[in-house]
Length: 568
Image (cartoon, rainbow, N blue to C red):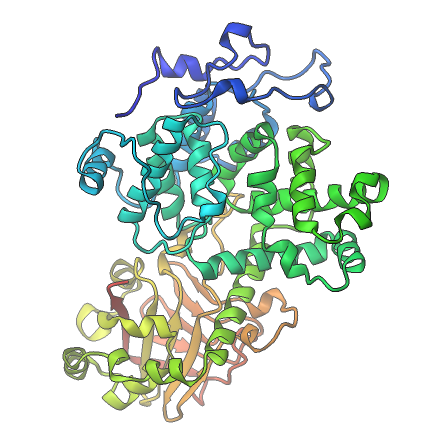
């Protein structure tokens, strides 16, 4: 059952003095932590005291800023405040940071323990080992400083999470993150934190599939080639027969398995607010530091590391020669590494992997995607025939062959049509904005039929960036345009076609506000519709390299239909 920290939690969390009495050395840790193993900072890692350091900020101050929506201020505080590793602030700070990303309804009291009872038949902690879910990487079940009881608790949490989130199929970092959380909070609190991170829609924290895992390390590699060019060139030069891929596949373990615990905890302070981009930045700093040490320290000479750079990197991290504060300062000083830039690299890498997997998987998968198993059911076809003013069955089958294979497993459902729901952008958002993906079908007064497969929720028009500003464009490279009449054609994102570096104007997928909807941008808009869903225009654009979808360019809308997919 959960433990409850004694005393007033707020007053404990606000005890933030960097000077800690011996008797209070481990007051910030949960009972299932082996505190005697936790080392304080070595003397060379301790920052020099000037006597003029500003007081560390309290939990209450940060809570008030979050409630006021001042996320950027919170970000700066988390980056700059080096709370001691044993500070009790984390028992409240981390749950609050993770909780802000929760997209589902708030969990009812006792929900976790009901789930535990449902999975294990009891809430008592078993003395026997628990079989871990298949998504866990057995070679990286890092316990850090958890006791045997703490490890059993971590095992139970990931089992319950796997039961509650069946979509998680591969997530090697989930267990280490669970272990880290358990150092500062109860079992139930750690589970709620994980649920917030896993369910986050605005930011990425934990990869949950093999595809996401692969895309992530390849994204880190692409970023490193640009931002740590000297280091990556050096490693390629001393190991000509080794592909860079072999080094970057283990990038997350440089941090999670290599860095000292006090460094890891400070990184987590920022990670739980900002997301995985924090780890990207730290990885780049590690590469640069390792490169410098290789040139000045015989321990890391080419002859000593060329046969196993991966392990050498992790060993280097274990005795990294900078303090947590200096590591984070260097990480956040890297220029040109914005969330938007990382997102563009990630999306491009993801689309290239997806397109290559379809091309190289042979005819078996292609045949399957057009088999009767992957077509809309007979009932769905009847429903579309009865309700649709834009799709014939033949056109439906054509459109189905263009969809991502995984989407063809689901059945289409009509979410919105101007024939029934009226011509209002407000109504459109109410009925459509939470669905992902969606199909927009337009039939003009000249009987042209065209539209777009929109990969992201229209609700993302409201998502704000780190500066508190709404993002103009959103969506991913899975978005595509199509024309069904008078011509049939699909216009995919230009980024699928090759590895060439694309400009920002080639990644303008979706945009919307209270006055209009736009799909595609860059020297023109592929589809634009007004707030009354009556008039629109179409032009060629750089994102999809498409011609205008109707000859006149301007069009009057006879009917707009939007389809979602049941079961996603």
